[in-house]
Image 1 (tube, rainbow over the protein chains, first blue to last red):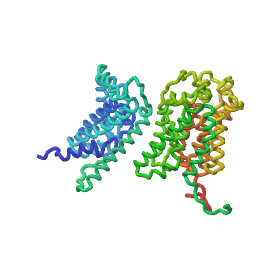
Image 2: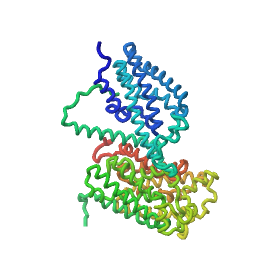
Image 3: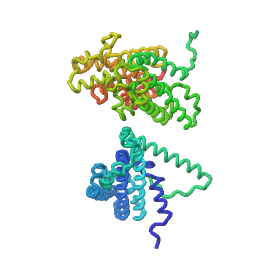
Image 4: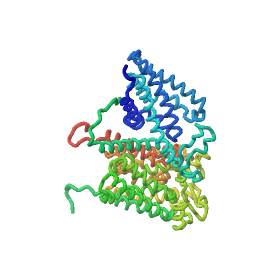
Amino acid sequence: MDKLIDRGEAKAIVHNGLWKQNAGIVQILGMCPVLVMSNNIINGVSLGLATSLVMLISGMAVAAIRRFVPNELRTPIFILIIAALVTMVDLAMNAYVHGLYVVLGIFIPLITTNCIVLARAEAFASKNGVLQSGLDGLFMGLGLTGVLAVLGAMRELVGQGTLLSSIDLLFGPQAKDWVIHVIPADAHYQFLLAMLPPGAFIGLGFLVAGKLALDRRAEARAKAAPPQPASETATV
Amino acid sequence: MITSPFLTKPTPLQVVMTKVLLALLPGIAVYVYVFGAGILIQLLLATLTALGVEAACLKLRNFPIKPFITDGSAIVTAWLLALSLPPLAPWWMIVLATAIAIGLAKHLYGGLGQNTFNPAMVGFAVLMVSFPAQMSRWAAPQAELDALAQLTYIFTGHLAVPFDAIASATPLDTVKTTILQHGGIGELFAAPLFQAGQFGAGWLPGMMGWIALAYLAGGVYLFASKIIPWQTPLSFLVSLAALAGALHLVDPARFTSPLFHLFSGAAMLGAFFIITDPVSGPTTPRGRLIYGALIGVLVYVIRVFGGYPDGVAFAVLIMNLAAPFIDQYTQPKVFGRKGKAA
């Protein structure tokens, strides 16, 4: 019996999700939550993880039923699956991390319409095995989470001089002291632009440019070595 | 002794920029008279920051530094920015705004001639959005502050008297607050802020009106030396005055006179030095008329109905966005051809 998934394939999927086809800074998908919820690390990472969870399960579910889904009806069916999963995440977050649930607000239900979730269901999960699709969903989500974390850290640091602010929403009131004040709190430092939506656009622009610069440097370095055959590169 | 239409060389950029700086000098002189020497410190800080950031960006982009840094365009941006800020703003504000104007709004978009938005106005908008409190702290005209006290205040924030003792709202600010609180301007213009001081010209909105008048003089010089076209400033001022005049006729107790609007805030500085930026505005004659007029409308709407006391920066940025479209639809007919140019 064939192995369900081999090492090289898994590696390529992980690399795609985290770096090569990164949802946030390469595919530039799902911008609405990325731009709004990246005002600090905690918000960004929480939303990213919730999205990852939905993508992991929806990837597997879509892949499992892919042979029975009529092509003409696939979008509503995928959306129904995703919406059901998002509702579960929504209810669970309301129950266990209510403070954060209030902050993230409408952006949890909106994971349903986040194009990256449907994009992976359509472009990857509907054509690949269950394990591959689950892995792809998870790492696409984690790639997005990474972008949200970095962007959140940048905006928080520039905007109010802290890291991990509002961490108490996740871990309860005793976590209030875990907030790192890079600039002392009594300095009342504030640079509103970074906290407002323009800060998200400018920050994301720098991240995209940074990734391109790193890629170019790697390319120049690898010029001598023979090119690796590219594996799955589904883009939407 | 040139008489015939020979081919002429375009004026070098350096000459253009020098003339723009020259044209700003009367405005700066009156500014110093009204608000004291603080503005000179701001101008110096802005110039140094602009040149430093310009050189750093050019180096990063592998451009030759000397020809670009001596063209003067960065200094014009820096001066316009310094003249838009409150004269006693803390030193880091002008440094930050200039760095953003040159680094973000100019070089990230591709440098001189490529910037979609007017760099000085981007810097101003960043400050206005991020630090609204500091941006509205204007010292009263002719406050008793010597140059040393102003210097100390800009760099350390320390003042022998509390800032509130010398602070004053700008005329535009006062009008806005009074209307919000009392619903009309009523007796407002009897207040000392609106008296033109020892110059004694009653129709000007306070001493800041004299600064605007000096900008107007500089603008006329720029027009006379063919640095700026007539369409943009004229259509801007006419549309601002027409709108203000119409509403002033309807309800003089609520809407101030057209002269007040023309000579307060950044209207005059904007008309001749900001909206005439050849890069971020349209290039066709008809386009310039439309562009100026729409900025005038936006400035009036933001001033009277918006949340900010003055609207020149935001109006200019919004219309910068529209400039390429205006250009596209106002292409002049090519000489000798029938119908519309492609």
